[in-house]
Length: 398
Image (cartoon, rainbow, N blue to C red; front, side, top):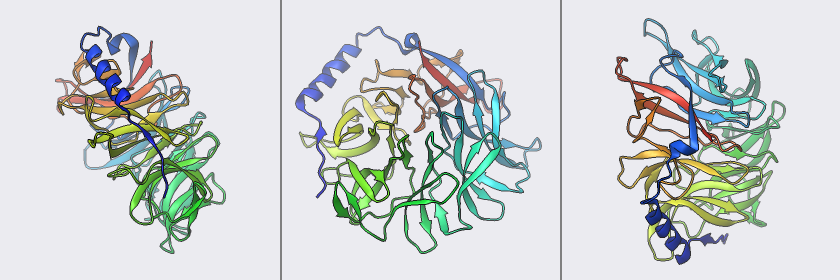
């Protein structure tokens, strides 16, 4: 049985309680600690409202995003993948208004420090393909025209240009793969056991979720063990280690089991479990050498977390989307204290405009090593027919 211990002691719980109490009298405001730059919005940059589905940032502060544009007559629309810099200058990576090559793109896009972007596309001929792009130059990583029958749409790209993805083969086997434009590497499928912590183990082949590949080529992913227990693992080529335990967790990694993996091999993911006092909670955790540390949880200020895994950088800092226990206040956070660790919440304004409640989205690659965080948000705008504009913002530590 694979075992990993979790740090959730009475001292930790007491510390969180004291931290929350201190926050009630704190005069620190996120606005004093961060500056906010609007990189683009759907009105000024000619995108459809609420069509931005992800935003990922690299070391230079360049942001990759996916959006949708519409024809002037409103009768047709098409997907757009681009990169935007700090000045708001947009570089087109892929779009096809006539849909002669592309039908649509994956919602999540990954970016590396060279500005390359990885994404999945459904082609006009009905095939599906994974690409790495440098500006408009596309390198095909894998395609259903070959030995694959389908892909998990969300990919991950490292600085070496290697793209990690989940897929099913024509043979029916499914699992984890990667490639850089040449031969594809099979890391495992559900057809044969692999080594997990040195023990032969049967993995289920994943849930077509998003893997996370770091600079060393180690890939973090969610899977089931022996068809039942769930866990987060990291490694490559059939040799893996456990990031999250598979025996104590009530719901394992659940349906949102995607993980992140920084260049030091520290993982970050969401999971649910019973604590020392038999209380059930959902938490965002980091995993360093198999030891879990709770970043934030639903017993201390938070009611739920965002769709994506928490973003983690190489300093071990995290950023995530959180919904507070009132289930009406949403924000971008970096730690367990909903007030002192908030970059912003939807109770404040950006550029003088009110944030529309629960409209904030923080992606899995939303944080860089400078501590900058990119996020998507809806802002009230009575001059627009829709009453709002959707924008992508960069939050930078002062």
